Image (tube, rainbow, N blue to C red):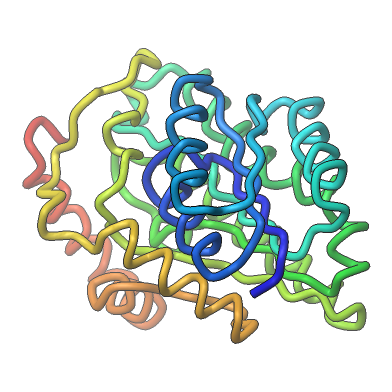
Length: 265
């Protein structure tokens, strides 16, 4: 792989794993992140692995930062082949309790962050006939209780990517919607509570989940094969299938599952 890959939210979890996975396969990698210290730490890992890379500090939910991420990528490497829209926030709060500004924040990062970076990157991806990846979620196929804003942002992302895929078919740009399923990553630790504060913990057993590194391996293969969708884990595939054909049953199944989380619903 002799490509240039831009990964938003590339300092932890799936984003960091993708930076290392694509880089080790021969790609030049650009990562974005809001935290300068985490950017530096990830950059050190990439350098130690001999991976050509750049970092861009910024928030992709801010239009100027999103534009700068793409501009810096082109300035550094002269092209862009793969865009991985990975930056995202989650939440853990009932809608009745949550401050609506939390939902606005989720939509700004998860949905508009994807829109902003994709818009800036599109001319370069048209030139390379590259790939746009949206790191979605099972929550983008099945609304999850306590995750109203997160589910809404991922449903919006899925619709955006489906429409964009259709538009770009004649131009040869692939659009991949990736839903990792429940994955051991940083997103639940940084999930927003009802008041907008981060929960700094996870209610789930992270050790039983697919690792971020496994997700990155699957994603690299899906990009190479120019797949249109990728749904991971047996549980994730089952949820998507059953929700399509037995939605009433899934309402009850999902509610019961999430009720088992401590302090949930």
